[in-house]
Amino acid sequence: MKKKLVILFFILISIHSFAQEERRKVLKINLSAAAMGAATLQYERVLGNHFSLALGAGYRPKSLFPYAKDLEKYVDFADGKIDYISFDNVKKAESKIGMYHITPEMRFYFGSKGAPIGTYLSIFGKYNDFHGDVPVFVDTDYRGVPVRLELPVDTKIQTASAGLMLGHQFRLGNRFTFDCYIIGAHFGRVSVHGESNQNLEGFDDDFRTRLRDKILTTFKINEDYLGLVVDNQGVRIDNVRQLNYLNLRGFGFNLGYRF
Image 1: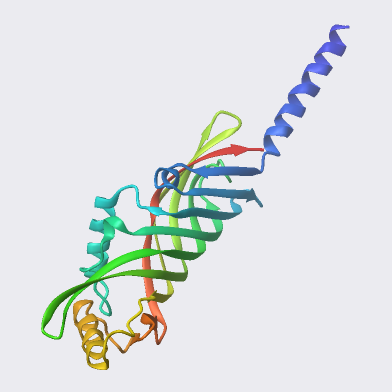
Image 2: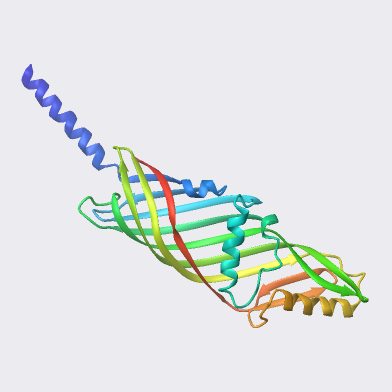
């Protein structure tokens, strides 16, 4: 009887160890994205001792940014790095921004623990779609009278990029993980579209011409990169050539469940 119990014990231990080894999938939720009002999930699948593939997706409904002052600081910083448009006359705190993204990723894990635990280097691609209502204002004049035009701009920005990132995934017991994106960078292309469907039919051609010139100077628009149209239907802006996009990725925190 004792012999049978010992055999059964070792069988159970073997099954338990095998089950642990077979926990090659991790489903994660991004905690830092949740603080920004976004829902972001990632599915990671271990392929070998040191490799895994992951696919992330996120969505944020169009709404006010929860940390408006931080958004203004970020936009002001980015403003100094962009040489084809300025955001000085954008009401950043009143902007409603939504987004969704898809991020495929391949990871290489260093060390003896192997995937999916430990320090890793990832190669990733990233597609972002930002869309929102962005209010702007332009100071001009009409027949000698100073006028401030406030234009609600329906904005859409799409990016496609690829890059490298360093991170570390910690084991939390047998089932859970804590995945920390440390730092990374990605480079790619961006397309821009903005339109404000204002009825300008009541104004003469001279006003629309001067309004176009005022928008160009106010927002420091470089027409080598962005095309601006002002007509009876309102104002529209689109990129006329491919625009470069460089951004950082990191300081993200993910809670994962292994299965």
